[in-house]
Length: 175
Image (cartoon, rainbow, N blue to C red; front, side, top):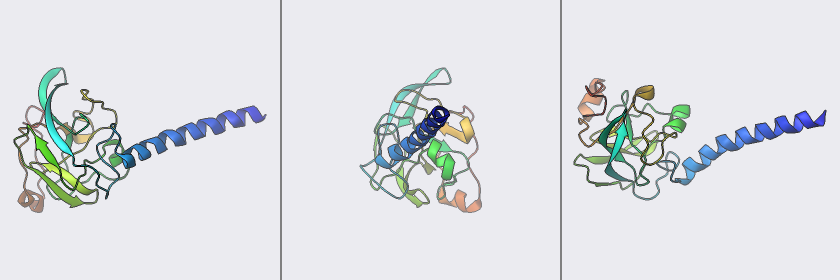
């Protein structure tokens, strides 16, 4: 009778390790995440452009320093992230005290919010998706997240105060 308990205990540890691995990866800023845990800034977050296949079509998208696609969350405003808790574990916020941009013509800023010093592009707070890998876009349109592109229409703090979120881009790709 001890054997089934050992197997169940081992499965439980594997689940805890898997969940803990996501947390540790997020805290350590590994290549599979966009940033350290909320409230902590590490190296500057470089936002750059690369071509990628999005929904079967080659597009120019924004990626982080590790080449992971960057997304924006439609319900967010220019001053407030609605990505917290379990959602933030699936969609880690890109945080940095001193972000840089390469090849992207928009404005890169830092917004102090619940996720710490979160990076924004043209007023859109940025996130990665835990299922993505460099060169792979899997989160397009999932859970109200859309791939960030260099032509992403700016949102402003005035729109945030008015309580208006940006409409879905006509093409679905942020331009």
